[in-house]
Image (cartoon, rainbow, N blue to C red):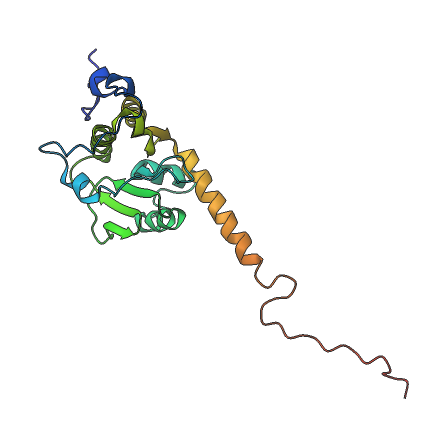
Length: 220
């Protein structure tokens, strides 16, 4: 039976481009950013971030999130639709900050949902007829071509989809699953909760100080 394999960019590139060791350059040599290939995604050109920095706490300075895959994972244990797209965007937007560049990539059309660069370092893109898997694959291939095998690991893909993960790894990009992202969100929520309860510790905010009873009361 023939394999039912989705046609995604880079899936058949092999060692020529797809594997980090396939295109080596002398150690220490600088590599200028490559221009976008003709016909490259306009979405990529519109959202490509500025110079990458290595001071991100995540080990990668650019994170591509497989939106629907993450949305379904975070809904696990609850009913379908328990995490609306707008709520997902709000949670992720609050969970990351510069210098980390985050791009949430979703299947479908935006509708009333805001898109584009919503905050410094945070963008939302809808495929609009192109699958999110395809858009992510295109981002990964273009990142490898622009950064080379040495710096491709400054980009991370978050997905549980096996083909998305395999294609990212072939291009030298870091990969994390939805469990990693859920853990990051939970840790941030816990930190925010602890920060909130520490305000006014020892006495509820605005509580009036109770008057102490007089020691000589009843001795007159």
